[in-house]
Length: 85
Image 1 (cartoon, rainbow, N blue to C red):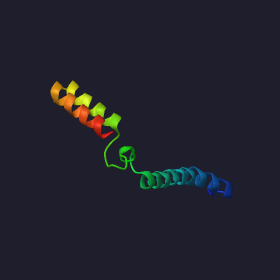
Image 2: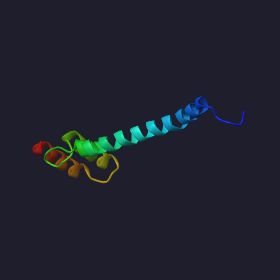
Image 3: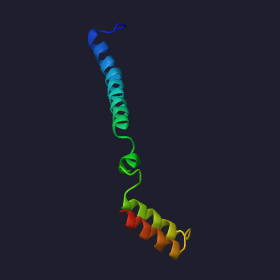
Image 4: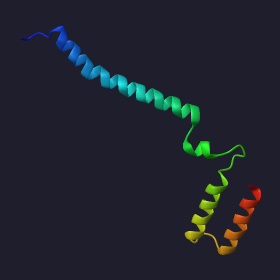
């Protein structure tokens, strides 16, 4: 009763090693994914180095909603963004 059989060792190893192997696989895939594509924000930035027009307009609208820019500033910047597009 005091000794482990090969069956016991296989059960212990599978309980310990299988989760560790899965964790290692997930970490490796996450690192590979982050190196290949970067973050979502980096992928949204186009060839020009600027975020897409829609994102810029939404950020501008957010500034206006928060009262950080006036209606005139909003209109002028919105026109500038649309001209660049």
